[in-house]
Image (cartoon, rainbow, N blue to C red; front, side):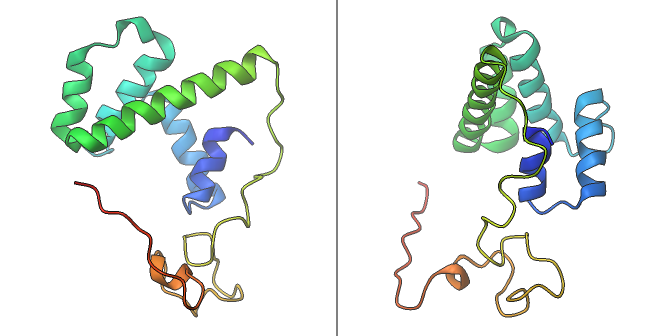
Amino acid sequence: MGHCEMLLAVAGLDQNEVAKRAGQLASADWAGVPPAERAAFAFARKMSITPWAASEEDFRTLERHFGTYRALDVAWWSARCQYMTRVADSFQLPLERENVFQGLMPPGRGTDKPGDKGADKKQKGDPKSDRKAGEKDQTKKRP
């Protein structure tokens, strides 16, 4: 399983959705994908194939769709993933066959399947429900 597929699975997509999205991303056939996601995909693709051609205008396109802070997130994450891919390729590190992140996410974060222990007890995606009793909310708000 590739890193992209692992991250999509951790995000809560099932195997069929992961295969469909990974194929769509690889083919650059982004018809039906919202414009903001298409802009992020195009930026990441350019960073992957021709990083020297990435320009301020590419970032401004992200900024128009996501705002400054989220555009920085997209650019940073894309750069980090490109770096990690190049490191892994340089050292010829093999990809894992199984999703090494499976089961590491707290319950209620999209990884629970119907019938899983604890899946019905917590609200999906509710960070407060993932805290231990008595633990304070340490979530920081962005400006």
